[in-house]
Image (cartoon, rainbow, N blue to C red; front, top):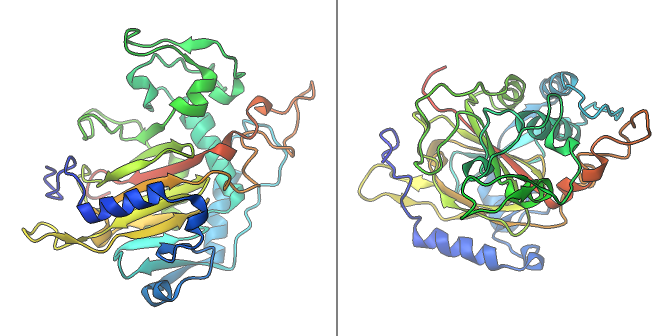
Length: 360
């Protein structure tokens, strides 16, 4: 049991939220369009949602423009592309809260597509190859890092096993294609969470990427990024119901979506720490590329999970990542990463960021 939250990371979720989770896991994609319980900011809200969803405040255009331009302007252009990087954002972005999810802040389309592209480059070209950033693959395989200045996407997707298992009796070797298309499920930034023991190691963690931290703090100043897990989902994947209770502070969690849409389910806690601890009714939200949710207050230690990732929903402007038609070609007329073009079309990338310790 975590000393700060008084909650057990191994505890099973309540039956009511488990039933809702299973119902969305089994639900046909077409049925989602008619589900009035599903909160989707890209369609007209139902009467129930209109009565329960309110705007807390809005994010100012000029403030956001400076944040996005600073982030994209600092990018190391590993793809050597000549595409326009200027962020296009609306005059203001509303921040919503739902009555059934007190403390859960929902920011639809918080990150413009151009900034999402640069963020993908940094996460998957730069941070993934950092040997101090652990992945799920490191648990069972020897993961050879690409040469300096390259990413895994710099290499051709040849069907030749290159990553040896630590225990050949249990696991087989991996090809680069299987690694990037299916086997790679997460990479950790900053504090390297131990998923087996459900705790953070006591050793000094690698620093959290400064540029990503500045981007996120610009959007949500009450977030101090110290650790993150970058999840890589394929349609058909899920994230089981759980609570994030291992951090030594109650600072908010921030979750950013890129790529395919997903169904997010959350049930905030009532009367935490009392024998009569209960939860608010489960809420379900359809998350789109660029959306941010911030879990704070009663939602900070909420039960939450992803029962469904929806295929064929990646924004067209991102679907070619990591290689785009507008990218400049090399001296021999080849676009960088062209052999992996369209990889993101089948993926959802979720960056889940948290503060580990109290105070700055």
